[in-house]
Length: 76
Image 1 (tube, rainbow, N blue to C red):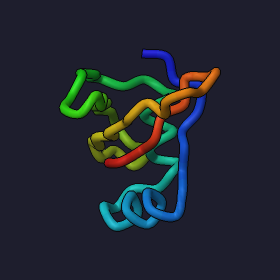
Image 2: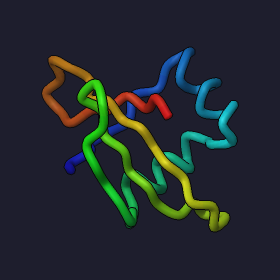
Image 3: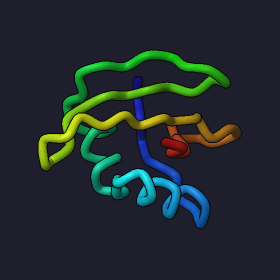
Image 4: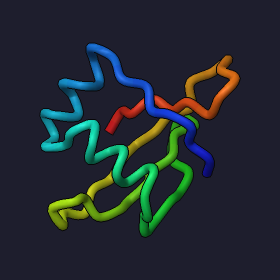
């Protein structure tokens, strides 16, 4: 899976923080070494990996349509 960038907005930033994540945590897993990747429902993808503090985190991604880069919306 190729990810050029993650898309953040006024909905997913607080939503991710509510689950104990930060954008940096999601980026660390998406752009670093992750341990598991699979396709999920609604054309979403799931990436599992270790956060910087050792927690195992799941990041749920949906590809943003009509982009010239591989841009993904984080929906945890």
